[in-house]
Length: 386
Image (tube, rainbow, N blue to C red; front, side, top):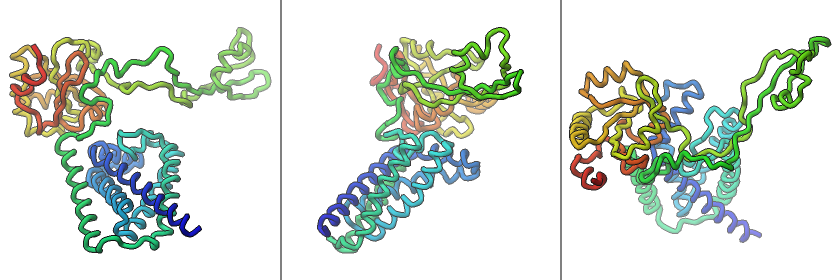
């Protein structure tokens, strides 16, 4: 029995370690995504003043998870790894239970954009991981060191430095692995297609009615109200009082890209026009012009001049108001067209502010963060076919 439990403890530790490594890695791949998720939580908890801490917390979270996972998997820094994993789960399991009950943010972000889980799925996942961690913790003293303490510290410190450096690299450039629906090679119109036989979302709505004879009030589902004419036929004794807002009780099929739209400053929807264009679109993506890295604006302006000289289209997608756009254009000599897109969509398209994407017939050919945008000649040679 003792041997069996020891093997179960080892297996639990390995499984928990792998989950921690995966969770930390996918967050380190996309530190800006984790930053946005922290900001979502801060706003949901009415703590907007913590926004400045979002990025450091994103780096700390991914690094801590990855380091704990490596230590668990390699059986090094035994007590520290087990205590870290236990405290981690002791904090996040109750939190995810509360999130599942209240649903202030739909996607917890525990596995970044690599695996999207609902809040309830996240809670059940944490219950399972907590069980593995508890077993590993109980038997933590049964594991002996298989290398020197100094070697363990060297590996742990090296791991911490490497994962932090990896996170910062993905922050300064673009994620080395793009888990989002707007990755290079994606055809946006195809990503928006909903199959004809796809299940639709199911909504629930209640009507409050008054029986004018008895004075009795009832609350019934909208589908019952619609199907039973006793409530609405001519001469009925029932009087409509109020209705609740429709609530989704079952989500239907959702295409990979379901929230993409482009509007002109006058409000005209030009999404189809842009996606169906057979030419090449140079699209600057800047969800917030005030937070944009303006030091790269001269290079962007130069790229604009060269692109339009070759009859290519050059526009900017942003989420700010018309007055902010005019101020930006005047201050930075940005003479290209500006269009409006939802800020969440823009953040999803590219993890940069600003960034550049090359679009051709609705397909994303390339994308760069502002500090990585190559010269026009290189772009032309590699992506712009005559």
